[in-house]
Image 1 (cartoon, rainbow, N blue to C red):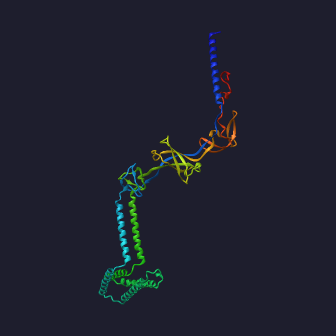
Image 2 (spheres, rainbow, N blue to C red; image 1 turned 90 degrees about the vertical axis):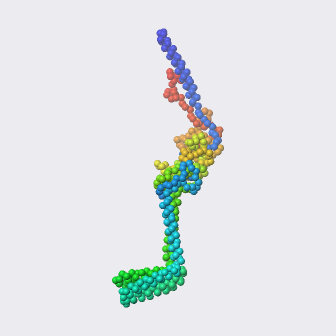
Image 3 (cartoon, helix red, strand yellow; image 1 turned 135 degrees about the vertical axis):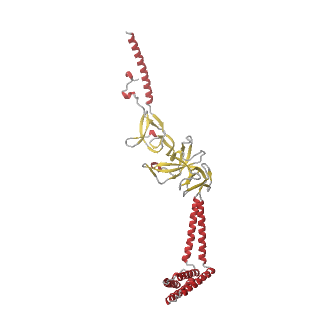
Length: 465
């Protein structure tokens, strides 16, 4: 036999032997994979949770703004500073506002003095002064009349009518004043008499003014006007103030007080004070800058407590209730689990890209961790909990083409279906209410077929191990 042929046959024999050994090893490995993987049905505690992400917020936080814009005169705090309730934080230039308050206070005082005068009536000195003014005006009027030799019968008639109407008005006014305090004054005869006397006097005065206007003399007309004005002033001082005059004076005082209050509010609004004790998170302006209305100047927060503001999908919100416990994980502290409680559920949902969700607040319970606002958090809200129930891994629970739920139990080396009733579940296990007991072994993984057999069952050179 040729030497080269012998060598070739020897090599082929060695390769065939090696492949046979490899095939045998693979067959043994696949045979070990062909076994079912099972786990026992256990009695355990199952906890159902609703998971969501959110941000850490202080228990209370507020953006402080000025209602009206202005020049910032003072910034008295800085970020990180602790402040007390009522402490002044920032202040606008208040010089003009202070002047407005002073002016409003003066207006109140003036109107209160006028109201006091109206209520007290005229003093004897005021009446005497007015009477002297009438006498002086009457003398000037008589002198002007004599100078013009105006003694016509027509003027004398209207003068007499005016005098008679004036006296009648004085009499009826005196009678009215005696009963003016009565609540039924409007239906008393004194009221009707005063109204008639007033109309008579106004008619007589109009006739007199027409007669005087017809006289072409400036000096006489001026004297007549001064006399009429002096008489009107005396009449006003003699009579008691009417209810309308008192009402007007009182309304003027009230109006002045409202204006003062508005001026003081504007002055107060120019000073930012802390509504509660807390820590300044940020300041967004410096002294000397012009600040617009409603621009956040100081951000204040109470860092004595925190909550996680999260959003729960509408499919899960029905299971979330006030007071439920929650586990909180923070990206900043991945190895620490915090505990919390649901303290707020917003009744109105938010729609984002067609998805409805509801804001839920989870209060962080006491912790020594240095939490900070806006940290990222994951919360697991415990919505249900059962102890001592039968549970199996989720991958053991299956559903047939009719929708029936079953698990497979290994019996004499063969997996057989057992229809079950399930209860609570979470991301790991499912409660089994009926259909199995804690002595059963459920199948969680079926055998894997020999891959080479799927392609015709052959090994190289026809070997099958």
